[in-house]
Image 1 (cartoon, helix red, strand yellow):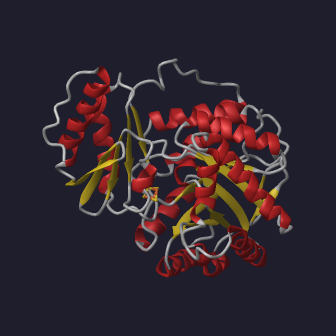
Image 2 (cartoon, rainbow, N blue to C red):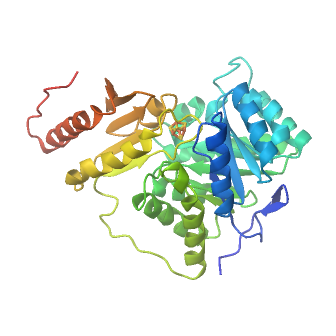
Image 3 (cartoon, helix red, strand yellow):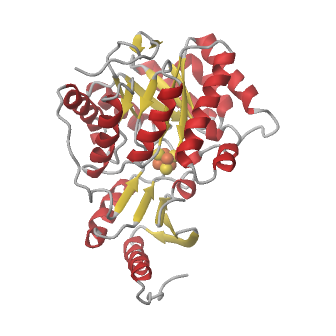
Length: 386
Ligand code: SF4
């Protein structure tokens, strides 16, 4: 049996989340929202896999229109991911059951308006349309004021950001909300959620390790975090984020349920001490912003091509779009983000340019060798660097 949880129960169109309710398993459409055929297919795949809730991202009025079509063809519970344009909540709320906002994205639009006013706008809309709300904090897009206040203390910054937003929502008398605090490092996820739950044992928590990457490593990273948190009674709904071909996305739900069943039956998996010490490849799970489906194949090719360097503690991040790619690769030694025809590459903070999908692997290998050589003190061959 899973340990009992102390959070209050909220409802997402008839789905209880928190308290004594079973832990809900959810996922997100990896397709471009405006590609109606692909997104409807994605929703059907996730529904068939048993998703309790399906998230779709919107970034523009055209995305909202697409979501309206999708809403017309499915009874699935839908959640919307507001990317940077928080005002879209107004037009999308009548179509969905839950709204996720990222506190780190509220400063992009209407810079003179306070964050508190923006939160009030979102809460009013959620209340008016009977939607639940998720305060979705992501370490890759931390709000600037928290990054400044906490410096290198990432866990402190993301946990405090969630706490402050809860306080703002509480002041407005809204209770149908939950919180997520995600990072690509499972240990940061464990620590941040543990600290948050200590301060706010009443607030339901959505758990996830973002950009966990491809199976099996992505599943292992997620399992490590979920085992540690759910076994402590922390976590009311989960999402397993994996980089997978769109037609295989149902696996996120299947894996989520397997992990829950294993924890409930005491089947914990141990991870050898060196599991997290070598080469670390993080990759985004894709979403409506993905610009070329080829990105998923590329992530797999990167993994295969770099296998020779598995003993080296180098982090390579592979991201699916040019909007979030540059920021989401900030902490990696080598970062790639994919556009329609080109893949952008950076080494540390230095942008090295854009390469075609056929040019990128040799160039990445060259840069990886240079990083390894630099760390071992050997003279790096800089031929080919720009
Ligand atoms: S990096 Fe881009 S495509 Fe990938 S999940 Fe993030 S926003 Fe979506």
